[in-house]
Length: 176
Image (cartoon, rainbow, N blue to C red):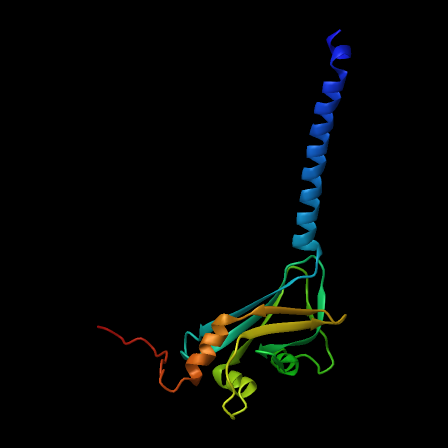
């Protein structure tokens, strides 16, 4: 009998197939858990221009990629190691009460805009403060700190601070 003579080889092959399938299943489980199950926030800072007034502003967004809601205690911008809390400003612009928590629902985002003047007043103290690496941060109710780089906003602020760079966005000329 061929099966009786080769039982060891068949068990070895079936064991390898089962181990490979188990490894693939575990890899899928942990990758899906990492993508959706954990609380992760993604930060985006865009250098934006209003299409009507042609004024420049920073469009800041905090996105929640997980399947759980995240309630934030604080949201702000860091210039190097110095944090600037924007929580009250966000609540004011969003029309929330002073004691309301900022809740980023599952697979959703919250966003707000800051004009160049607001950025300058927040990040610069008028004493020649240096513009360092800008990062947006959020602190949830448990105390976990999330951070993300916002390089485009840094470029916007650097251009606005540089007296040599009078780069202005103006309305396009009408050509007839």
